[in-house]
Length: 299
Image (tube, rainbow, N blue to C red; front, side, top):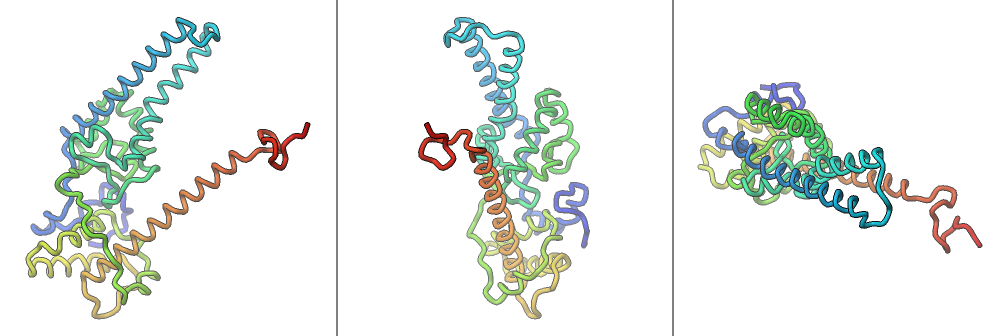
């Protein structure tokens, strides 16, 4: 059962998931290709309409010379319309994906959402990969590449999902967040020093879903599944938990520590982005400085 595959490996995802009848009910249901196609038609229909209306509006403004700047030459027109295409094909979809946490207008209508392979929320890097690949597999191939890839992959993934390590799930039925996990006090020091990087995404998703639904399960099934999941997880953590640790408390400690480490990484990413933005905005040798600020030119 133990594998060395990375969490985003599509080929090795199946062995990481529980295959017993009870565990199958724990798996989050991927969205069907049909629902993804309909949500995509809504989303990209909006983007295409926005692009068309923007081009028409800009064309009328140029034709009437409403800004009083004269008629642009061919190079200027090419640059202008290239910028408009980039805006509606890349920038707007990326902003929607990031700000909505994987819930675009079409997915809200269809009750779906983009998540990572381990069931966590997508971050801007995942969204960027999906949008950039979508330029080829959706816009340039007229969705043929995206639909074809979705039909042959296990979770209905398109090429952008395969590269980003994401997929689309049916949110209305399966993605309730439940009560947040808490770190068992007796395991906090152990979890802080434990290597949990090798835990596959599919197995992590099964554990999270089990912990959310454990209270609604029959006691005998809950105990058996807790033991099975704890045995699988223990093969990917080092050192093992203290002897006599309850399986569910062990699973909760691992999931809380995994969540905390991901949150710390996200905070570091944001801090680096803010630092880079401030560095870019800082005046160089007084250029761009305003009066009253050190480095500003004096009259």
